[in-house]
Length: 584
Ligand code: PEP
Ligand code: MG
Image (cartoon, rainbow, N blue to C red; front, side, top):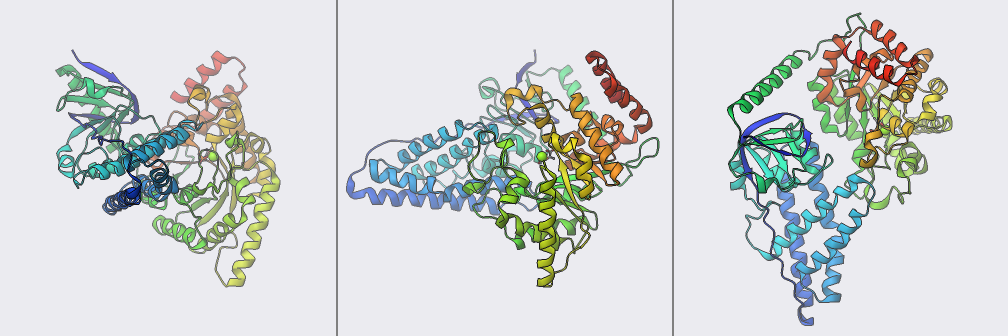
């Protein structure tokens, strides 16, 4: 009888193979007090441990291939930064001096303090960062208690172990970024972890590596045997063992079907996204880091509709300067070979906090606080270098600048004034820029959507940020698991605001695109077409599937269906009409 274990499916796909159970190698810690005379020696032993830990991580970092997902490097950099932070360097050293405790113990005390700080945080993403503290502390403790260089990985497996993972389903309590790097060229089929949620390292990395993954499968290692045949269904979040021939046949069929669909989708690369009634739709990509531009080119997107530059500000204690901004933008422009790049000015704050407290104290309601353009207009020393770099980049390619989280026309005027001043400055410095570079804005606050016609008079284009528009319209924090069930892209208020914005833009004769997650979700494609959308911007991995749906749709019919939908006041009828549109 097949036996199934349930967790959260965080990376789609199916894997059929044998398990490899990773048992975490916990360092044995002893706690003792030390005599006064050797306190400074103990501090030195601790600092040596830190140095070695940094060296290990730098070695691991150097091995990351340039083609690796950018997330991987970012995670290692976070651990390296932590090892430089006073809370990891000075605080434990002070504990050794004041409490006369040994180095391993001092680290344990400091770890408990830091973990508590993270656990008390409201933001679920930041709460998961306590794992980083655990991983870093464990690494240093392991170095302090053993001289064995084989203990390079966080889980305690050596490279020799890693090389045995080919074709295996890795089952662990949790995986760290360093572990994942050691594993990434070993042909791992899937990840199953006992802990973690959709925002955990394993989830993020598995998605970037394209490997199926199930997280939060509690006690998986107690129920699964090592080297046991298993199936991982990353879509449903299920792990199956004690397989019989019927189950195997079913999943082999699903795997084949998935591969066949991908091959079919690949044929759409370079083909136009034209509907059955001959309307051409522009499909653009969203990126977070310059390195992501390669994937945009791979799926032959019509340029970049959203470049989230705030990621450049993360995992560091300083602010990028003009030259660094420029280098990143030029990197993207060169890869895009003439296609347009929409650079969004830093959208910092709320769930995208930065190090060094630059974002200021986090208010009680960060999503409603000093965020995005509000923060940039307040911190011009941070904003001006970015403006100069965007303008300078416009001399080298088709660049558009986009302002996030607009709520008033005054914010637009302020930005336009700053752009004009920056142009003057560049002229004086003899630096080239495109005087006609379009400046557009994101419509992601209901107030801006309602006043979209006014915004359209001053801006070169509009882009609807549904991730935020939904959270602000429905008063639902997008990162709060407790109210996730209310987060509804199909709420009539949301659809009305989207339609209103599209109409306002088109009446003013400016392009309107939509760059929230809705744009990359095939369940909403027909609905958005019916609302009049002609430009979508999404994660590159989903672009070909959206193109397939578009080629199969008839905008004329969908427009009428959506008109009927938005006229109805009957909730049941509304659901029925939505279903019809999705299947139309
Ligand atoms: C959005 O809000 O829809 C959006 C695209 O911006 P972000 O997700 O970066 O806030
Ligand atoms: Mg947004």
